[in-house]
Image 1 (cartoon, rainbow, N blue to C red):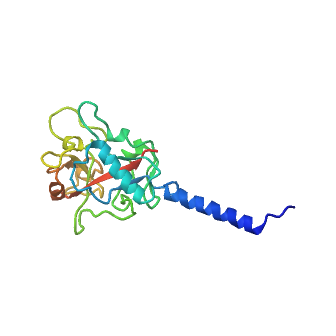
Image 2: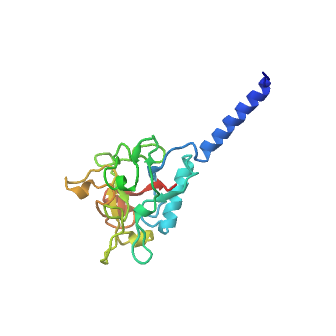
Image 3: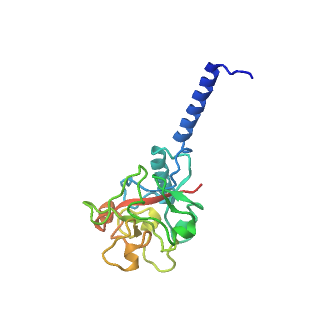
Length: 219
């Protein structure tokens, strides 16, 4: 049997290890497909529209080593050309930064998902503060109905001007910790609990938020 020189074997092993490391850096080695953003860009609910919100998700995912995927913000928009959050995020399944599956597909996500304070982690795998903590940040911007769609009819603002306003207006938010002021179903909704007090960062913080988003890998 032909023997492979040791130096060649070692070189091949080193090359494979290097390639694996590069794959991890590009996001291929990171199974994360869902996270809550660890920060707001600083302009409240004004992300520059859906495209800006998606870029924010992509940038945070890239910094966490999962930039090789296409990341989308779980946000709906209204009016002509409006989009449903549920239609933007791929098919699933989606894991958090710790490898816990929060939903296997879109239907489960909007049914019996596993989103709780313990699983709705940020891109670094950290727990996001919620009700009862020193600072409540459980309001997550969605602009969506419980089934992940844009609101229909009416003139009330539910998306802070389709994510372009940082002053007056309102946006529907969900509670990542599934907790609220009462036991009524909306208070415990992860994606459709109530409207925000306004669209600025101070206004969002005033109702228990911090301008955070849910981000999903769409591929």
